Image: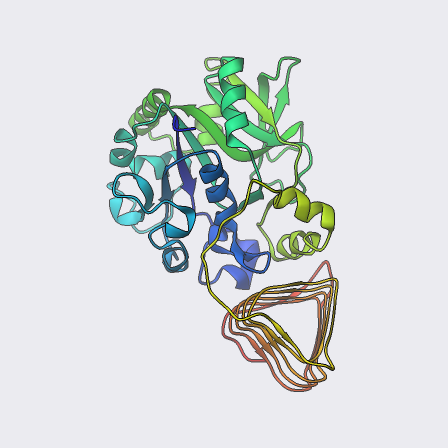
Length: 369
């Protein structure tokens, strides 16, 4: 659909991600063996025919810059339009040294970019949503409902609700009440579709009144003035906001039904290409019920785990219920269970690390234990 323009909020951080977000935002968090969280929403937009996407950043964005590059891997490297990275030097407001207080303030920081949007409709979405969402269906629902803002929501997602919005709907799908932090109704996926003129009007209105929250200052405050409609998404979705939440949703990928929902035929999820040799399994190795990316070298035992590219498992090592990110290494004789090892982590020989499904051990990038 060439009538839509995409804007992804990739500046959000969550304190409960702890070691996993020390050097990156939630949108840049590795997920599923070879992806980053932002790959899902970016691919959703590309699959819907969106050719112009802006990515709003704030702090700790080097990881995103390295991953997204020119947008070539998403077919968004174009002379006109395509992928545009919007870092904080484009923000003209007085609060330069701190993070954005809300989505409206973040949008005001890229107001000049928004003014140049050529499409009729704009999709606003958080970058840490993991879902395979048909945005063309959202647009069709938006047009048919006559809504001014369509909010994508789900009845299925679990997780912390301290900052989430929930919608109560009438029989026609119109949103009649909005709560934040109170689990009542359908949970917001923080994906919104509205017209460009309305977005510019709301932006000017909020800027003139020092309003900066989209949920509170737009949706809640204007629900009687604006026609707000809901698009209910019933597929698998996750918002990665804590270490435990990240571990549980990653383990969901070991279920065939979840993989089919996230990676259906005809709606691929794209990511940065890294050419690797196939994974090597030694004669004495054993792997069961695991997701293993290319370029790994396995001489030990891997069970119920997710291995990113370039992971090395030594002789006699046992890896169970773990997530090992790119270029992590588990040395000979080590035994680990319920561990999340960030990139380039090394677990030394004969060491034992045991966490729990509700309290997994997270190891910072580049650490040696």
